[in-house]
Length: 420
Ligand code: AMP
Ligand code: GLY
Image (cartoon, rainbow, N blue to C red; front, side):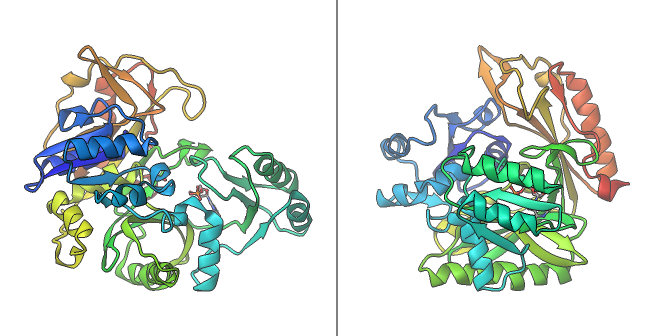
């Protein structure tokens, strides 16, 4: 079978790597991929927002199945578009992708189905929002409704900051805004919880804890994710049951009530407070770096799982995991998440020796004339699967130090809540 993957990050490299071990798959394409995906896949340089060009390539090359990595094409409806041409796609429809594409859509669903989440207000003008902000207790959270590449969320310590946030959002910082979401600040511990669904059946697909802030001790600006470990230290059978019955199942029912269903990976970003789950947000895809942290723990054939899913036979798929833990540290370009330099050569990569349980997944990299250069803020993911997160972390740090890339920086404290 020929499979195409859409995306170019660490998540997509990890997906390519997992598919390359599948008995069911003999050719992988990556649109557009990175220097890492090149070892398993043919990289195709097509803009991932150009659905027509992707469709033409898929049909011309008789690609049997497309897997969509990132949220943007999903929210813009790539699945509906490709399915019109009878192309098999793993990923949710445009309507179901509203779970990530509109925070207000999700909040209304939570309200209707009594899904635990931060209490909230939706305001259609800055005047109305500001009247509400006068009466709030702080901190409070102000959010833009649509996709904002992780930047549309403001945790505000006081009214001045909150008003600023509201003004920025209505000022169009994240595109035209008709409404703003203001919500209660939840004080707990975050957990990323994943399921895979074929629209009829769903199966759990691991948990992780991501470290989103740029500096050690979870300080500084939000990023796409500086590293993660899996499973989350909070995971237990009891909590899993609560997450499924209070959050996941009512969400899937809510989608049914609007005549759609969910196909693909669904990622619930949760806040756990006194062992009770609250939904912070949904993402309609695997997380990044959670994907590269979780997939190395998968023992079963990943290709088979995805194929079962697009054929609505997920109930029959074998999904087994190594009884081990996994830890990922992201090596970033200096300056990320603000300004950083691209096209800095990464010289020593070929010299790094990896054991069987050790992985390097590329993110922002590009190959030119047999050399590898940086091409983004998050550059490389170092992942180790083992029984001991502390040893894994020490070894990852050793590997990154061996690489000795002079334009890089990384957090040395990934997993500190469970390691120390
Ligand atoms: P999001 O883009 O919705 O994932 O939000 C980014 C980050 O903001 C989350 O990972 C949380 O750390 C934080 N956050 C969002 N909403 C809340 C909330 N209601 N209470 C506390 N923290 C929040
Ligand atoms: N790691 C956070 C995300 O993928 O959105």
